Length: 271
Image (cartoon, rainbow, N blue to C red; front, side, top):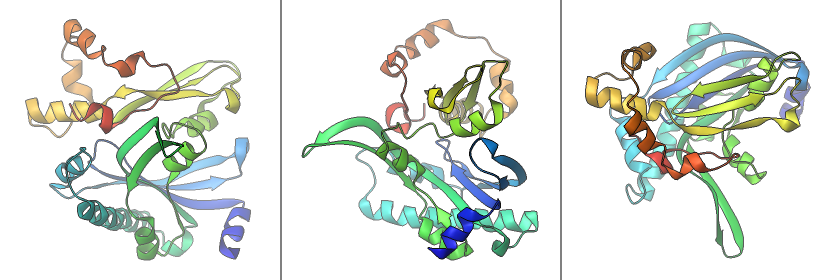
């Protein structure tokens, strides 16, 4: 407890952020200097690296995230395996940045989303809204020796949120404006947008998942062009919109839902 109190009281913190999205291709790791708090928070990116998953792991993750596939044993072991991989991403980041683990105050690990069920289902009198991320934080903490915090999406669901998207607070800190209204669109595995009205207040922030993005685009690039992904959007930019197919895709019921809303592999699969 004393260690956490000391950490909270520090005016500046060196923090590592870890995430793997629904593209299921690896871990993104960022080393960030954070100063201040609240609206006065300052952020400086010190280093960034991507740590690719081993060949074949993406297929295993897709299998495990598909209802009726995989086993509890596989799920438990995958949680530990991903913890090891996330820890390796931290160690690579530190090595590239020339920073020791002892200099880092905190790791924030999102983990790997396996299933996201934000719509409530009632069981035994409880309205249950659930999400599952793997990459055991205890493994990350033990391997690196750094305090590790996780389970951000379940915490948001428990507070009555959707559990996604998680980026709006960062968008608010970095892009709010007294003169302009801005919309920020993030094309991750799932796309999401944040609406920042002129002089936006945190309480009035609007953000939601718009639908699938790279999780589908990557699969199409692999299937039709034998490429891991559409680098710089070159393939997409060379074509034209097929309106008939687009109109059919937009019939999915998710697009008719009003915000707040979130989605993932459970709703859209990969392609």
